[in-house]
Structures are given as structure tokens and as C-alpha cells.
Amino acid sequence: YFLCVHKQRNRTMIASIVCGGAGYIGSHTVYELIERGHSVVVVDSLIKGHKAAIHNEAKFYLGDIRDEEFMDRVFRENQIDAVIDFAAFSLVGESVNEPFKYYENNVYGTLKLLEAMERADVKKIVFSSTAATYGEPENDIIVESDKTNPTNPYGETKLTVEKMLKWADNAYGIKFVALRYFNAAGAHISGKIGEDHSPETHLIPIILQTALGQREKMFIFGDDYDTPDGTCVRDYIHVTDLADAHIKALEKLFKTNESGIYNLGNGKGFSVKEVIEKAKKVTGKDFKVEIEARRSGDPSTLIASSEKAIKELGWKPKFNTLDKIIETAWNWHKDHKNGYED
Ligand code: UFG
Image (cartoon, rainbow, N blue to C red; front, top):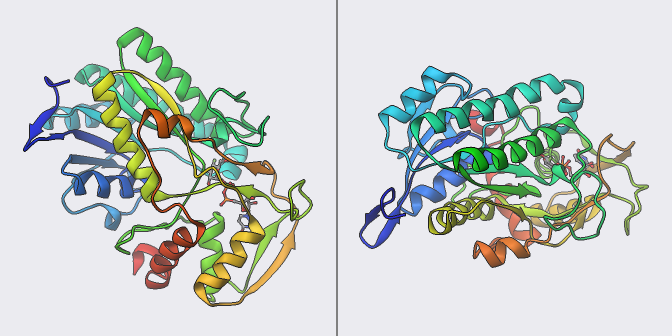
């Protein structure tokens, strides 16, 4: 622990490579790392990420985690203690239509990254996983030991990597923490970075774009689910709270050298209709909402138990109300109507 981690004025400074550090959750994690005095090297292909999302104190390498020479150079030119891996495709619908694209980037990409880590003798990784590893849940509140049976290739590729990590630990002693996020939402409190996907498919950004008049109306995908108001229920978790969990996971890896898998959510579900109502209040805007057919592959309810993360990582979500989540997202969206192009 003390051998590979540098001590800096009573604080433990960890040097990490953040793959996908220009993306939504990655960029927020980079901000938190830097705010807490850690040193960061961002690796991003910018296929999905945004250069403007990268904190100016992070060292940036443009390239692909599948490129061996490139990754060897990044490890060679920097003294690295750990890797945080966000680099992946994450659109559920697209993954159903183009599964190979997801296996190529998410599974093969992470394999190449792990090989590069092994060559560089870096033995710790925090990995972005997802609630989509569970598929249709067995219980109202999902715990990590529940059955994993993904209903789409996106979730399947993430589950495949979790299993690969287990065997990499077994064979090479690469210790990992896989974090299964529920619905990431919100934006940095400073208003400097936020959510900008293209195409946008996520509920809260779509609601806010409609509130801004950028969309004439929005659609609710199905109101005939077996839920209190018939619309899907999700557990929304603020992106800065997710970022915080990555740092706690890193710290735990250095303290205990033990691998683990953790859910990250607030443990509270909100229906699509409830989110829309709340957003109308926060923004003070009314807009047109229509009911559409169900979107294929959507489970009716996804709510996390994060007890394990709370207990073992010492994690505690701070932006834990839907108001705060929507407020920070709104703050970003109204100032960045065209995302990072503004
Ligand atoms: N929804 C609408 N209208 C829209 C967009 C979304 O009604 O215009 C609904 C969806 O049907 C769903 C809910 O809002 O019921 C949330 O949808 P999102 O697309 O925002 O999020 P998902 O729950 O589908 O997906 C999220 C992450 C995925 C992850 C998944 C885990 O975005 O990466 O959680 O199940 F895989």
C-alpha cells in the first residue's frame, strides 16, 4: 500500500489513468479526483467523449484502449497506480441492433486494457458496470447477489467483463471494484460539465430539452406497466455521487487489496410521470407529453440496494433528492443548449 501510493502532506495521492475520462460519468469523476488532490491521466478516443469536458489539470492522451502501442506508451510515460475504466458504448437499444459493436468495444477493449495493465504491472482497476447486468429483476430492491440475466447485449458485455475481471484477479492478482450504476443523472454543481450524448436517449435530458423548446414534445414509453402509475420506475443517482463512489472504491482497493462488486443508487424509485412532474416544477415550464408504445428491453422497475457500498466503501450520496438531481441538470442544460458546442 505505502510502496505504490505517494504520500502528500498527510493525504494519500493516487495516480490513475481514467479511460473514457471525457465522457459523462468519467469527466465528473476526473473533477472529483483532481479536487481531492489526486493526479489524473485521461485516455479517451473522443468517439463519444468531449474534449471540453476534460479538466484542465488532467493530462490528456487521445487514443483507443484497444491500441497496444498507444496504451504501452501511456503507461510508460506516467507513473500509474490504478486504472478507472469508463471507456465503453452504453446505448441499450443500439446494442440490441449492433451487438458486435458492443463486444468489440466493451469486451475486447477492456481485455486489451487489462493486458496493457498486466504488462505495466498495474494491478488495480475500478470498472463501470451497470444495473443492466441484472435484466428483469427478481426482487423489488436489487442486491448484488441477485440473479444476473441481462436482457440486452450492453448489459451482457458489462457482465462478461465483470467475469473476466474475476479471472484476471485469480490468475494475475489484478484487484477490481465493479460499480453497477443505476440511472446516472444530474450535472456538476459548478455548471461547468454535464450530460451531452448524441443522440440523446436518456429521460432527464430529453425532458429538459423539451422544457427548453428544443423538442416540440416528448414521449412516455408505455403507461401499462405493473407500477403505481403504469410508467417505468427507476432509481436516479447523481453523477457526482457516482464520481465519489469511484474514489472511495480506489481508496478501498489500496487499503484492503480486495475485489468486489457494488450497486450504486439512492434506493428510491421514481416513475417516468413523477420525473416529468418534478421537472415541470423545477424548470417552471410546461410542455407537451404523449404516451407511446413501450420501448423494447425496458424492465418495469429498477431500484438498488446500496447497503453494501454504504457499509464497505463508506459511501454516502449527497445529492440524493430528485429535486437536486434535476436542478443541477437544468442548470447545465439551460446554459448549454447545444451541449459542449456552446
Ligand atoms: N423514457 C421515456 N421517454 C424518453 C426516454 C426515456 O419514457 O424519451 C423512459 C424509459 O422508457 C425508461 C426511463 O424513462 O423507463 C428511463 O430511461 P433512460 O433511457 O433514461 O434510462 P434506462 O433506465 O433505460 O437506462 C439506464 C442507463 C443505461 C443502463 C440502464 C440500466 O442509461 O446505460 O439504465 O438498466 F444500462
